[in-house]
Length: 188
Image (cartoon, rainbow, N blue to C red; front, side, top):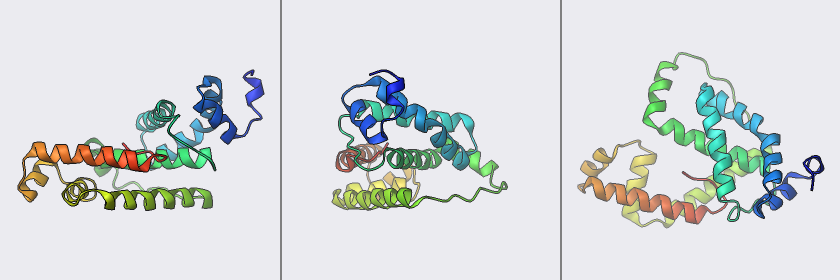
């Protein structure tokens, strides 16, 4: 199939071809979606380099995991949800926190979501909550302390009276279980 022949193929069909290893089909998906994904990341971050990196990381991740990722409805919605999730993780990082403290005075743009995107986000949140509840209690508590409360490994260790290595092991185990449980969604 020629590159020009891919232009009229729907995204879901291109994704199926990409899952089978068709690099050209994946390239076509990239060409169709990278710019909108970059803009979505940029307007949340105000950082061109970080936005580019996030979009690239999403596409690399999706290519590497293509055989496990089943997208039946909307490739665009899946990619937007993956970028949003990656942006949220970036914003939770220490480096990003400092940048955004400096940008705090700047007015942030109003962000709107399509119905399709909102549904994909709702599905992701529901799946995430369900998988989070399946974690063993101690592991879940450590994960919530880290991700939802923003505590450092040392702070969690002190709060829970456990070693920092145990905290790291619990976080690593939680991420592994969440990745396995979420399957079609993106978590890093």
